[in-house]
Amino acid sequence: MFIQIIQGRCTKQDELRAMADQWVRDVAPNAVGWLGGTYGFTDDDMFVGVVRFDSKEAAAENSRRPEQGQWWGKMEPLFDGPVEFHDCEDVSLMMDGGSDTAGFVQIIRGRVRDMSKLKGMMGPQQVQMLHEMRPELLGGTLAIEPDGMFTETIAFTDENSARQAEKLEMPAEVASDMEMAMTDVTYMDLHHPWFATRA
Image (tube, rainbow, N blue to C red; front, side, top):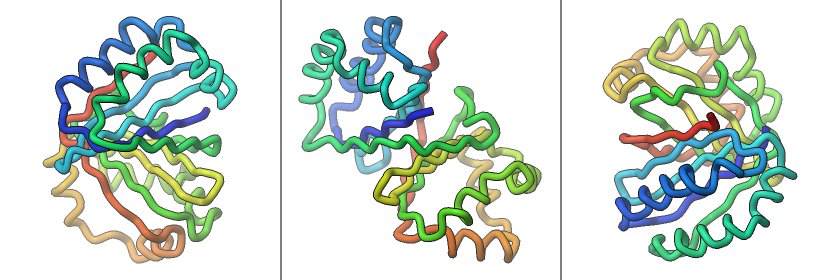
């Protein structure tokens, strides 16, 4: 799997959402290798899109399609400034990658400090333990860029359940692994996420 993260500030949220829906309706049916996406806005008007393709080559081929370029020519001006793109070939799934029924999504950005520790936290045994502790967690993706930056996208049933579970004390081993695995961590909350998946 290949993931592209699209990020930019946007105060024209209704217009951007309409353009995103137009892409799903008019462009996605013939999009090369497109699997789906998770989208939303933070409280400070930051749009984040986490778009999944079956390969880097498919994503690049899709970008070259004329209809993709025409659509982006209308989409880009809706942002208040520059748009960031983060391309990730190194992708790991947690619990099948999440769910389109999620009511709350948290995006975690940071830098990898210990790759084996970070990926180890996505192992089946660790994920099973986490899910038993946090049943509101529906799954997620871990996407790592060549320069060591990562984006983790975590889907939850709802925000209230996620916030309540955050108050639970984390096992010391898990907390230690997290500290050793990553640094420069920031969190972006998508209170009203939306999703699209290839039919």
